[in-house]
Image 1 (cartoon, rainbow, N blue to C red):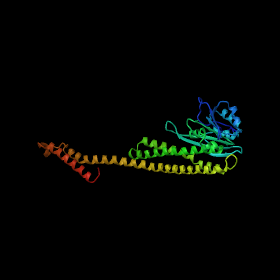
Image 2: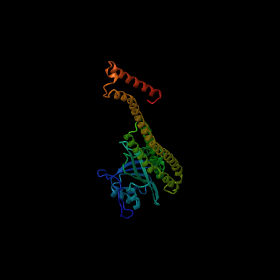
Image 3: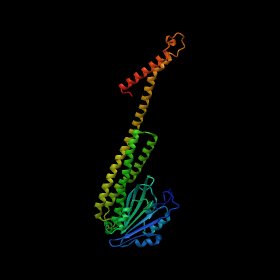
Image 4: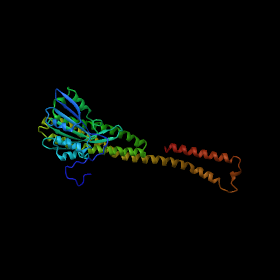
Length: 347
């Protein structure tokens, strides 16, 4: 933690990645030409600061603070921005720093182990320049479609500015929320069936896992409404007023996602009642079965107890058919009681 440090001191707050190096991916394009490269020398990045073409610099990895500081120096980023980039516990937000806009987003997806992953994406939007800082990189991000669109001359993104590229990145992140919610919704439906048919501890643990995922989703998605609203209020050379209709469409998607998320949260509350009800019903069925068995054995116990007494003068003791007769009474009583229980629908 950075307790006691001065404001603007960058401290990486994520998981330490000692064996991973930071990779820098660059897309530089306009309507006629396009180049894609990976930079090794950070000092050369400065040439994209005032380029006439649109440039997207995607930084894969933020764990090496010194490299992030060097990149920030090339583009004259404020120390508070650098501090927020390496602090992965930021709330989604928008800050206007005059020559650029700083945006914090949460990218959510299920990894190869089907585990929910929430990753912070920091974005700098300048004149003809977009820089994104992310933790996992292109192997885990949701920007594959944007890369393909930039590579093709037939898409609108090639003829638009950096603000449209920023919109495309935000739209890709928001659209992927739908995919995540669809998977979470399917898990909830399967869980609901399991809670009814098999309300076990394993099922309950899975339910708590899904509930925790929904909490993470809520923390990532809810602030997005404020982010889009703030972007719509910006109208200058960085984000043109014509972008409002695009951000309005993203805002509608965010509202739809929030509504679905709230519905799923209500479902989780109801599923707790379903679990307790299913558990109670299961216990009642067990108790009913045990009660029926105990009730059937009560007269049988009486009969064998009666003839188990050690009195010498019991009439049936010397009767040749006494033993078969007792068994006959036992069978008749058992069958009669089961028939009675069946008629009353107790079993």
